[in-house]
Amino acid sequence: MVFDQSSLLLQQLVNGITLGGVYALIAVGYTMVYGVIQLINFAHGEIYMLAAFVALTLITQCHIPFFASFFITIGICGCLGVVLDYIAYRPIRKSPRLAALITAIGMSIFLQNLALILWGGQIHSFPQDVLPKIFTKIAINFSDVIVTWLEVFILCVTVCSMFILHYIITRTKIGIAMRAISQDKVTASLMGIPVNRVISFTFFIGSALGGVAGILVGIYYNAVFPTMGYVAGIKAFAAAVLGGIGSVPGAMLGGWVLGITEVLGAGYFSSEYRDGISYAVMILVILFKPSGLIGKPLPQKV
Picture (tube, rainbow, N blue to C red):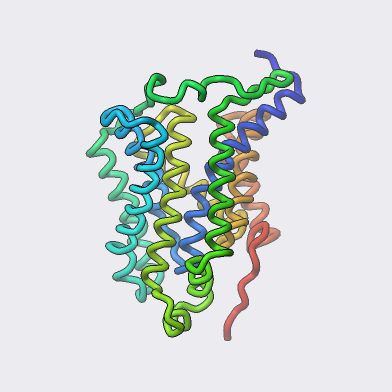
């Protein structure tokens, strides 16, 4: 199909918004954990990868319908995040940050190799007959711009997830407790807030969102493999930094900016340079605004 310039731009924007929404979901998981306990959970990308494998297994091996598998996988990923916190991060919570960083990298390598053992190193795909048939149908066809129902589904799930998360953080008691711990963990515990329980809930929500992203990418690109979490995790971390690490709205914005930039770079320049172009944009933003697009500079204590 031959596109004119306006149609090409619109089609690339649709692709970028879809991809950016996925990056935003993963980036929110990074930034939530960092905002509460100042930890970069580098194993977050592997939870995203495991979500795709778990959903694939439930659908193809256990013959569970897609939407049931979708919600079951989200719950499993959330629980995996809680277990990860309990086993790997809680025992070293008072240790230097370098210890937590090394532990996070170690858990990332462990989960990646666990996937290699369980599912092998080859690329797996979702058989088309196990997915809802509506996903392959065209929802919008305007001036050579094609939007499938799968892309509509991804966008709707992303937006709904962000609204639910915003409501939890701003309007619920657990959200207030999360914000209190991010301000001062010691004072929050003295005020009666169960710090460990709230941190575990933060890991649950962040990992569940990463699980949502893993399923969406697995069915969108129809390719699931053990190392898929590494690249996506790095890009989502870049998106979180781009928007402002520790800021949930910043992670959302950073994900969409990175996704749109990456797709436009691939469409107008070369797919070989898509990663380089998106990272170059991130570096330029950080050079001129070190706190990110909407992040706030942290005051220095003396």
